Length: 486
Image (cartoon, rainbow, N blue to C red; front, side, top):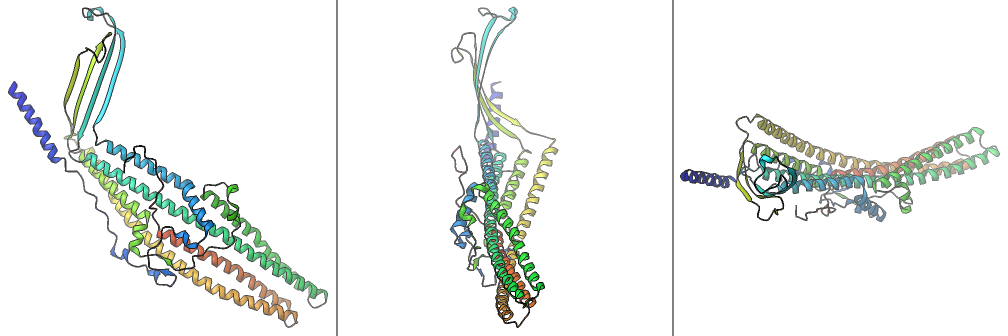
């Protein structure tokens, strides 16, 4: 009998020794970062223009506009935007999940206690005890899983990757919020600029109406000339309410983006009428810097790492799970203290659980985890391609918006000269009112087209900066009750 006990002890020690030798192993594949196609790291096709610089872009790209009001709005949006707050809360959730995964690698403890009062049958009463009595039971238990096949470690890896992906998702939200804020600001200032152009055009047409009326009263123009120039004046004036509505909508959008009600938007924002412009070559870097900056690319890579680790979590279930456990407790009857003279009990030993031989459900989970990883890899590849597509498209749009603006500037200058000459010739009676009206109509349309082209250039700049992405090194602090480094 004694020899049998020694043999069991040796077998248990051998099992524990083998378990320790396997502890460095982890089931499932290790994470290998996906590789983008070599061509993805090349210089951009649309970067061959004087408006583009090859140096790496700045994360705080909005400061290139050198507009203090805009800088303040962007900072407000990063601090108070509701979408950013949601993203930060999701980081906090991912951090909490990581703490939970890490706790699985520590010994698990439990303290249990029960107290009862009851009456037992007389036949079960021990000599010297009352039938009615109190019973107090206390126990302290501790258990520790031997992570032989890396189930816990792979779980920690997955949670850590989820946490990193949540941070990248938050950066992607910040990129969008900053771009939307700058775009709304551009929309508001551009509408204000177009309002100024429209009002100036109406003022000029008011002057033409007065001149045409005066000539009509002296018999130099017909009544039809007065009606036509008046009609043009009203047509131009009709554009003002639409521009006012556009400007108000942009201001209200700015208020929402910066976490304000429309009434709380600063007055200085409403007073801005100049559309911001970078006024210098925009730094864009190349494909390599783009993929290193884009939060959606980095988030896709981290999600692939998380699901790769979950393959290991599922695979570890194919093998035995060994938990070392121990407990100590005591039971006190009647008035005896629970930590007094009551009998003490203790228990120590391993617990082995193994889903064997029917492991089909586990293998199904492994297959599902592998499929998730394959989908993540495809998502990563697609995200890389879309990042390149968006950047090249934005570069082309910006370059052509600048060309269009330059052409319209020349057309506007020509139309302005033609209108001045026509007005002078009409005063001398060299042309009729219809020719002057046509010149003024052309000038009004040229002014409006140039104002829209200026706005479109600013929009194209914002779209390019959005496509280039960005990373916030100084991320807002996320509550971390445990205070550990994650």
